[in-house]
Image (cartoon, rainbow, N blue to C red):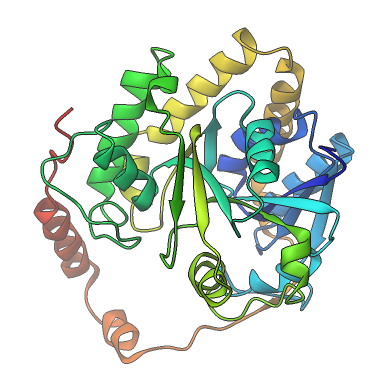
Length: 345
């Protein structure tokens, strides 16, 4: 509870390789009343991981897709219908938020209560195109050229090389040195502008105005359409920082660079040397290890959901008949074309 508000965190889940780092931040927070894990996957090992997490931590609540169908991001919308309690504040976190500054949840809840005029509020997110834009214009991050405020920027959002550089810049200069507070920016307002909703808070009473019925692309609707229609803006709390691992366009490059493992080592150090809740972190890690050991059997389990068979496009049908070696060569040359050296300092 916080000032008579129930605090409900939720995550569209998901992937245990990321959530092993996210979950301890949430269940250890003294203000979080409930953590809703939106089970939006067919992966039997990940589902069993969530079940065991719920058994281990009383504040964790598994929420099953209301329509009984899971198809990636397209089936997330239905979960919002359960986020309309007028006495609650909701904090939605992507499953691949892999680091938070200490006390971020409490800080963001306080910011939410102190700024009721905004529809959504967000912390400053490392690896979020508009957060990167803010770091750029505030002189915290010096890039090779000026990049515009655009959520789908081909560099700030799409580029795996840029994401690898950005995470390395943050880890080497701010996490390993303990200087992350130097990136704080204060409050920044935004309006009529799409941004990636990696970590956002809203009032249940505002969501109740439209029954939690989120049509189409939830990110476009939540960050742009709804607040614009109702004369509202959104805001960043630039004095609270979290790290988002990857957009789908970046993931392969970051995995090749071992970025997740670097965050894993930082989390391990932080939980064992800087907090009093190491047993929570260790419990989550132990559950993940047991799931990994049983992965082959768990992956063979039948999904609790209906599957959607994707429509085959002409491109996909043609691609099926292209020899693998040609596709590998194409990927190789495309990767070579993607430049590096975006960050000056």
